[in-house]
Length: 163
Image (tube, rainbow, N blue to C red):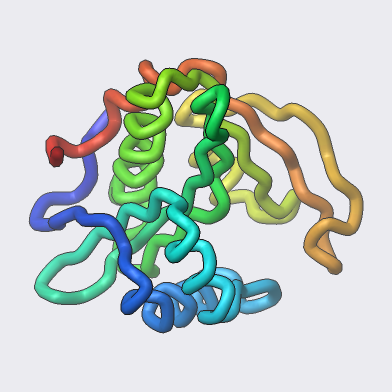
């Protein structure tokens, strides 16, 4: 599987990125976006937030909480701008998150996605995530599908070659 579309650079988000992350999240998830205040809090508290940029433009980002004891991860969100969807950028960002989990000694990555979000479900399924349950009404107008990947080290192979 590809390691993301060419021409992207990757870095960790800073608090100064919160407004841009919130704007992209509102574009990706107009019915339940994270406000910039919450984006700022997530980044400030130390969540791992890889950002992909190309020609100075935000292409996508992910947010991952890592359990302090087990090293396992909770993928909070994965956002990819419209022009970059279905080109490997989402897989590359998930790979970076998996690399962080594996390097920290974890193996599990858990996420939720809207049950009605067929593109996200297809991506995660193609990456090896398995359905683990449903949380009714989690997104207000939609249920959440809980998905789990049990081998972060294998998933980390999708990460682009960045430190």
